[in-house]
View (cartoon, rainbow over the protein chains, first blue to last red):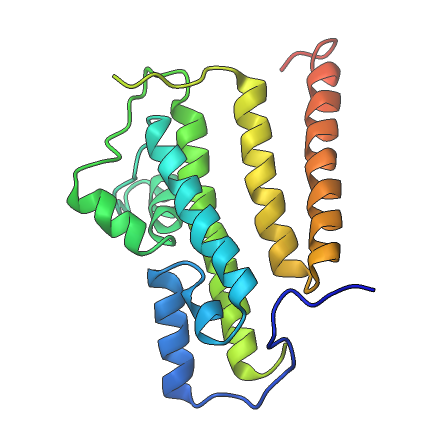
Length: 136
Length: 61
């Protein structure tokens, strides 16, 4: 028989708009925190560990954190994806990490890891939102 | 400059593993389903990458 991964998997009543916003912002800032806050401990821990790890691997692989440049749409979209990870991005930005080394053979892999970590966190935010709305 | 792995297969496998686990955790609620989904997704990623790699051999881009 399958066991539930967390103790609070039942749908619940929808949260107030203020709490919904709080869950989304917290979930963006700290990947998995929105799930942890709502009792989805196992899922939250997986996101809390794996998404920052993925972001860190991207930096290690000499990936670049793209600037918000509207003149280049692809760079702009990459920049949005990079920022999806929240606090790890802010820490990397403050530490001047993520300059990228375009001559490194792992450069494109690094970019892919960085952007995917942010994009996956956007999905995690949506999942936390659905839980707060009582849809899951 | 830090030493970074340059094996494309290793990096692709690591990427596929992380994405599979996160997707499976998002999609499924029980641990058993999550493990099964992550394993299937990971295998699918690797199989698709190897198949596409071989397809690009006779038809280079």
